[in-house]
Length: 172
Image (cartoon, rainbow, N blue to C red; front, side):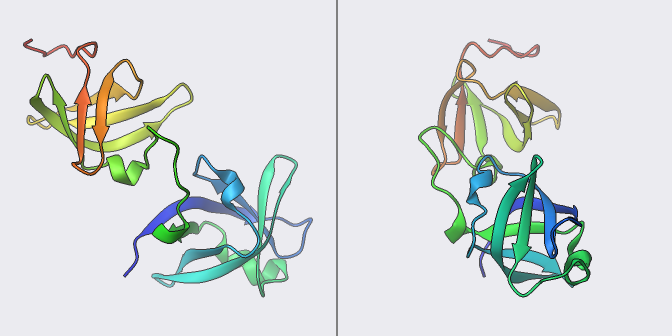
């Protein structure tokens, strides 16, 4: 069974073009939506395949049309649904760039001492922020900037914080 990765959410039927839906990408690569791409949408608690027939940007909106869905009535049931891809469709990332699903669950260390587990990544306008839960269950927010992160090793599921990152309860 393949893992599925969220790439967009369907917002509304786009009335000006028959069978088109306005979608909100949740990816740094909105250009990934191309004709012929197989995506999956959760319908009736099962991920069902859909083929993108056309993808256009119009008035600042990303619009998708799926193969064999030609009217607003055909696609209205998809509003509010999420669009996923499988691992095979993930885009190869540039060096020192990571998928959130790869970062989640990493053990975080500072000065080679266990600091906590990365449980989430917040995507904010200035930069991402890592949400780390320490051994006391407290959530610590760490800006995902080069000056605070020494090393990320996805294979080992390990993140090393730099000495520049200071936390109010640091004993060092």
